[in-house]
Length: 97
Image (spheres, one colour):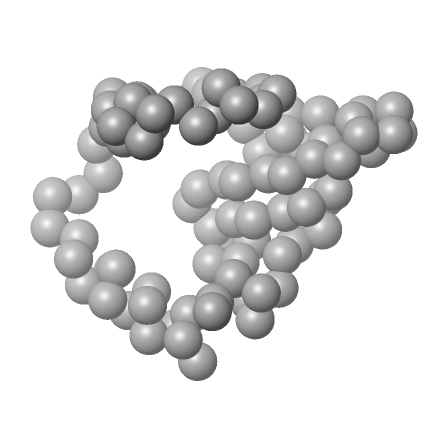
C-alpha cells in the first residue's frame, strides 16, 4: 500500500526528536502564502484536552449544519486517525494517490 511505504520513509527521517511549538508550522504557512487565511478555521492548541475540544467543536458545528475537518497528532493506533471529516475518520485509500 502506498500510504504504508510513504509512512515508513517519513518515520525513517526522524533524527531530531519532537520539538514542541508552532514556529516551524508558522514558517511553512508563511512560505505557502498563508493558505489557512482563505477559509474559516479554529486552531486548538495547548497541553491537554485538544482531542476532546476538537471533537466537541466538530459535533457543535455539525449540529449547526456546518461541515468540519479535523487534523490531530499524534495518532494512537492508525495514521488515518489524524484525519476526520465531520467526525468520521478519513479512509486510508483516500489519503494515498
